[in-house]
Image (cartoon, rainbow, N blue to C red; front, side):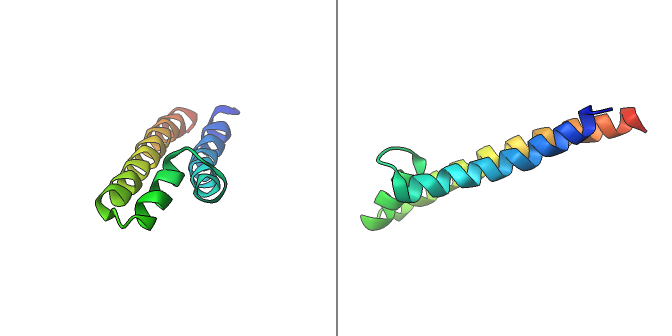
Amino acid sequence: AIALPLVVALRMGFSLSILGVVLAELFASRIGLGRVVMQSYSMLNITRMYSVILLLFLVAFVGNVFLWVVEKRLRGVVQ
């Protein structure tokens, strides 16, 4: 009975945690992908900057789609 709300919460939390970590790395970190984006931006290395942004997008997208599929399967089982 708790599985469906738990997966929904995990899906929402996953997306928000990716966003939070990257934003924190943009401003308050010496290492990390957010810092790589800021350094690439400041050095006008646009290719590297967009490559890292695309990588972050793909990780977040794949994780969200995976959890969405799990949610859909659980909805089929619950109903």
